Length: 182
Length: 182
Image 1 (cartoon, rainbow over the protein chains, first blue to last red):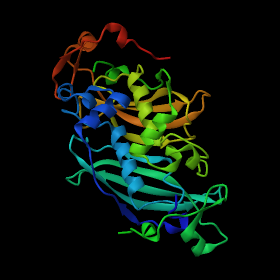
Image 2: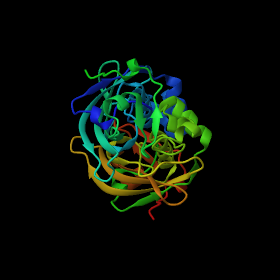
Image 3: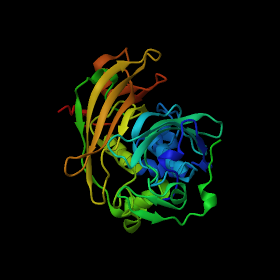
Image 4: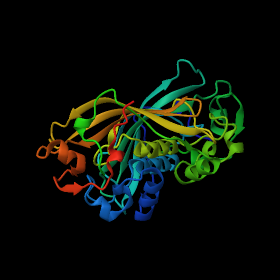
């Protein structure tokens, strides 16, 4: 729960992630629980559908993207807390064996008008497969706390202030707070 | 995979679902797999976060909403296939024990310009908790096949045409194809 404050973000910053492989079994079990339609459940039944074969549920792709985002170096203080999304597209299906990664770019940073202790960052996250083809694009608005006014840089580097103003010590070593702007 | 064709949808139609209960354990296991942040993993750790207690991941809420949508009477022919979303918000957190249901409304129906065999419907789906408070609002564009031109009503009632034009017989009994407009 340590990380960047609103003041640490700027439009143009980019962040990347590792890769995760999407396997057939998880496509089917995720589909069975959350999106039980033939094209997410069974190769044979998927053949005669719009997908022309087994494909991951868009919700599955979104969930895997969330995991990649949490593990990326974006790391807003207070965690990745989505207020919503302005755009959300799945340009192509995710297939069994695809290896997904993300590229995120900060598009906008703005303080909240009603909440002086926080703001929003607008972040476009593109989920790419192993052929560098986009499988999902989301432009999300994330809630990010502002750096606490008394204390400055020193305090910001070792503590954060939650929405109620309570300080929480950091146990995250400095190398985990490196900048990953590329 | 039988259901309504584009011609069967009209702006103003509404659809509802049953309810599903979100339990603590599933919030935590979903969080552990897809959104490993303190507010989705542990009551104690969640207390000092922006959520002030355990809350379901937004991806979890979205996935449960998908399940409710698949089980609702919306049932587009060819399945629920999302092209993307114009709006996506989580107005309030989902808490352990919440019972979720959805209300969907068709906002717009339009044939595709490039694909004469399909079109898009724009559907607003609001996910509500047991107190009728909105926990998620999504305005999604769904791909829906048009009714096959040769065959008319009779064929549409018992068969559908997939994007390649191949006919697939229906095994869905007539009562599952009822209108649910409310």
